[in-house]
Image 1 (cartoon, one colour):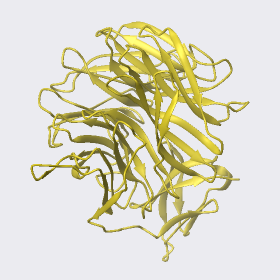
Image 2 (image 1 turned 60 degrees about the horizontal axis):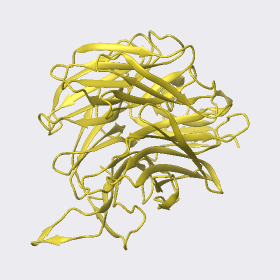
Image 3 (image 1 turned 45 degrees about the vertical axis):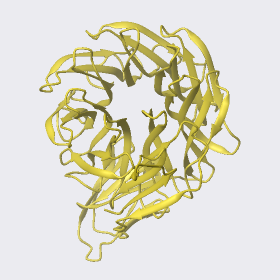
Image 4 (image 1 turned 60 degrees about the vertical axis):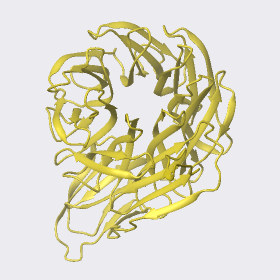
Length: 479
């Protein structure tokens, strides 16, 4: 364990007992890469998070389930998976037993390269059942919700048994035993995917995602609705002609409108110069308004997730802002109901920080989950941030650092298109390089103490494993 760092803001006292703070900044990690992707508040005002870890567990990457108390301190962490890559993407809390169910994807179990991965635990993170679903190709779970009959509906994307290149996939699972009740695949001839699912006030299950089949070939936002049998009810796309838009999340607000968030590609050839983008529609998908938000000096920015104040007059966005020079920061951003700027705060230092999900909390604040590499971190640590309803007003910060112990492997590093590592005896060592989606892009054996990647890899983020234990993440950039 490297460290647990908690920054507590706004202490209050009642009857001599410490009350949960309105704001905190909590981090936890080991010697590897630890990332949080999904978060929910529990029934006793704690926070359950799901993500991935290379610090703990059985394999290359394991799904990582953590419980944080109301003060932002980690109570426990549990890993799930086999010897290959396993990742958790989102989690829900069971109203029947206060346990947890999460979905993601696994390369350790199932039929194909990756399969849907669904795990149910008790309230202490003890395994009740786990299961995988998919064909011979890749299938990725991304979100899940309880259905009105108490079972589980999960969504994601599939390359197996599809109508086109990639399709949106929805499955219904028996809560008691994890058995498949039904599965549906929706899509056209191009790439289509589902990312989030919610039960909306019209009685349907609404999904957001991305489509190249039913809108612009450059990619559009996709709204899709199903009934409890999984039959399609609504399918609509939203976007601008000849522009690439990418949707990541949506909510139903207090006016029963749908608010979708993501990114808008401003480059001439849709090559990835993104700004933040938000669209509002009616519950049936009738377009109401949109807004594009950008600041000078940003290399790339996007909305990862959206939540809403309980009174409905503010939207809270978890925003990624990428400054020139590869510095990525977390920016909580408030807009009013007409998408007019209210305020923003930026979290981050000289290295990368990113939040992938945000939820509204019972005290009308917000919690974000992601990763941080600042404040002495060498690699990504799970990062949990709580802010109050203003999101931008904070008093002086009091830092509390506990159980500080750094265990960082200095025997492997990346520099100038080459991975260097210790191999003094010149033994033959296996190595594998994975892209950010988990696909092996280069592998082999070497008896040297370096691996030259050069032109063999395009620019981007990669993970490399050398031997059984040495792992790093690196960014290849030819500029």
